[in-house]
Length: 130
Image 1 (cartoon, rainbow, N blue to C red):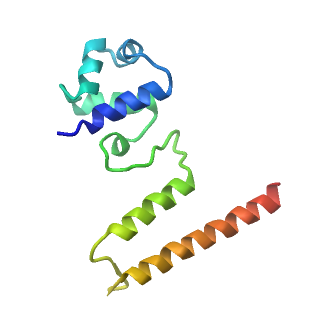
Image 2: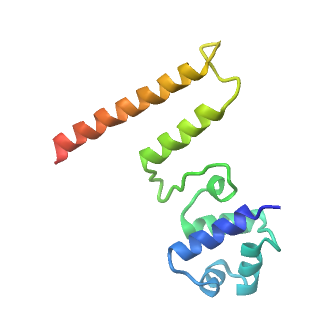
């Protein structure tokens, strides 16, 4: 069985240079409990998930694997949102728009339109703010 929550905890902890002991102290648990979470030998309960999310300033959706985009302080890079949307759009079966099924060409056109709008916004920002 995959240990997605544990892997994410380990990744988040290492990304900010925090030790298991430091994380444990912030969570009010033992370092061995953090180690067990990271190894998948133990799963955090809902209260602990909320504490972990608070420490790393992330959403529970990200920690639990529902959302692949990390959001910190309510900030999210728009290109990450586009990438996630594109992945969902291209892999979703039975997707409809205004009650009409989308084929692969329709999906490609939507992705291309999003990329075009993003390029225009990027260019406008560059011209406006240097």
